[in-house]
Structure formats: structure tokens, C-alpha cells
Image (cartoon, rainbow over all chains, first blue to last red; front, side, top):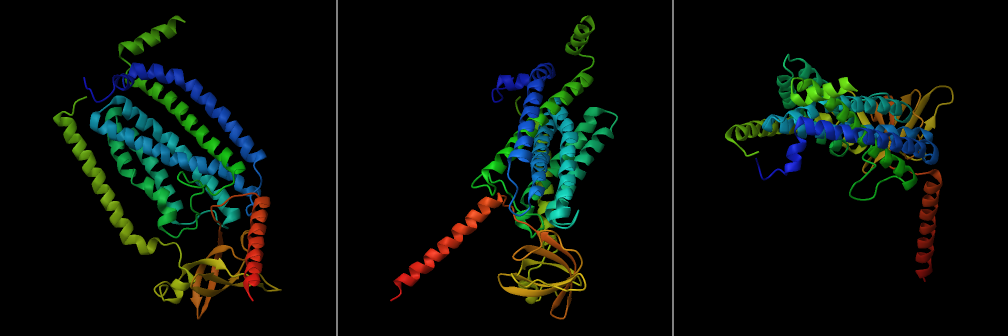
Length: 252
Length: 158
């Protein structure tokens, strides 16, 4: 069909192939997520030393920062998938975008809750309207808007397209969340982890944090694969490949 | 998948919506720029930037040695400083755990003559995390270096 998309990628985009592909990888991704998550929690809660100014209270960072990073990462994935879905009408892209939204919303919610629990003892307040906190709350509302709009339509594919528009417009908020602490005077501190340059954390605290960030990526993959598989079966209900799976299931 | 006219049209629509939304967002943010600043620093207040606000947030560092607690109430007075200014602050209430000398704080309140009367004081912490031993070692190394420099300077003196 085309020469600028590799054949394997094109094949992967077809529902039956992706169904099998996701089914094979899903258990591995989940195993890695649990394993890395357990190592990171042990490293962060037991092995890592207490912080010089926050004492043990800083340990909530091992949940807060990986969740916050995932809330933006998943939005970016959802935005790209929504873009592909709108322009090329690839069914798989629609499903990936729509099934990413609840996972992203969950991570955003965890970020806001853990941030609040951390803010009370350290800053002295549960919540304040500074640019970082407010833009993260807007991110949660964007996720909820995407989920709501998707389900507001009788026809799933029509709903997915409407919600995809909201998803790509909302992507503008992602750099705002990330750079809010640099652009404005905020109560929230700047970034601890720097991809280009020295991170502002000693290594025995940093490695559990990075491990947890990896674990959450695998969790997202595992959760997304499971959700996408269920959705593909529902969307392609009448097709031969689904009928064959149903027949095989019935036999065994 | 070749770019047929339908796809090209969809691509144009989607990209133009995205660009329009981005421009709108940038304009809104620029228009709100003044209101989006969470706090004013003492030097900004002294140059009159707080004039239009009844209440505002004052942010800066607690001047070392400036904290004075009242004996019979929760009243605390301290001085908040930044690179180019200082502002005396009065507060009655419970302060966060991190409140101490040289800590960044954000106080909400209003001006009363040259005093800032705070109704809430929040502590801001930085993005650095390290064990206490390392911090002490670094502080010690820093102090040693200072002494070395001072002695070096003294040695050079005739």
C-alpha cells in the first residue's frame, strides 16, 4: 500500500495482529511493573536515607513524582494517538487514545492527592492556587472531559473522534504543567530530575525514584494492552477473527 | 497509506485547530501574566508593585536571626529578604515545620504602614534532596575552604 510506513508497523495496526501482540506482551509488562515497583518501594522506603531538611516525610516523592510524570506522559501518548486517529482514521489509534484516558486520569488523581498530603506538613497547606497545582488540576479535568465526551455518543467511533479533538487541544496544557515552575513564581519547587545535567538528588535516593518511573511505564503498557484488547473484541464483534477466538474459547 | 485528498484535508483541519488553540493559549497566558505570579518579592513591594493589591503574597527568605517570638502569645515577627529588599512581617499563628532562618517562605496578608501583616505563612522548599550526613559534609567542606582562602589571603599580606 505505502512505502513510507514499514510493513510490520502497518500490520501491527490491524486489530487481530495487535490483539495477539498485546496478549503476548501484557503478562511480561505486568510482571516487570510489579517487580520493579517492589524493588523501587523497598529502595525508597527502606534503603534510601532520610532527607536533610524534610526527614522521612520526603519519601512520598517515590509515589508523587512517578505519578506526575505519568500524568503528562500518558497525555502525550493520548494526544499523538488522537492525532493519528483524526487524520488517518486508524481504529487502533482511536482505541489507544480512548483507553489511555482513564489510566492517565488515575495517575493525575494520585499526583494531586499525594501532593496534597505532602503539602500540608511541608508547606503548611493542603492546596493553593499556584501555577503548577492549578495546571495539574486542569489536566485532570481534561482527562475527565475526554472520558465524558467519548461516552456521550451512541456510536463509539463518533464519540472517539469528538473526544480526540478535545485531547489534541488539551495537549497545550502539558508543557504548561511542566514549565509552570520556571515561568512563574510558584510555591511548588522546580524539577529535581534533570535529563540534561545533574539531578538535584543524591544517588541512593535517585535510583529508587528512577526505578519507580520505569515501573509505572510498564504498568501503563500492561493496563493499556488489556483495555485495548477488550475494546478491540467489542468493536470487531462481528468479524471472522473474533468469531474464531470465541469458537476456540468455547472448545477449550 | 498515501496522502489522498481527504486525509490531506483532515490533516490541514486538525493542524490548524491545534495551531489556533496554541495561539489562544499563549495570548491568554500573556494577558494573565501579571495575575499569574503567585507572589511579590520585598524589592517588588518596595518599588510600589503591590500598590494595587489589598492583599497579596510576599515571598522571600527569612533573614537569619530576625525571628522573634512573643512570650505570651503565638505572635511572631521576622524579616523577609530578597536580593534587593527587606520587609518586616508580623504573624500570629502556627508556623509550618520548615519555618526557620534562611528558609524561603510565602506569606499572605496586607501592608500596614511599612509592616506586612500576614494571615498565612507557607514554607517553600527547594528541589534538592540529600542525606543529612552529606549536607553536613558539604557544609563543612565549604567552611574549610573559606578558612583556607582566608588564611591564604592573610599569608599574602605583608
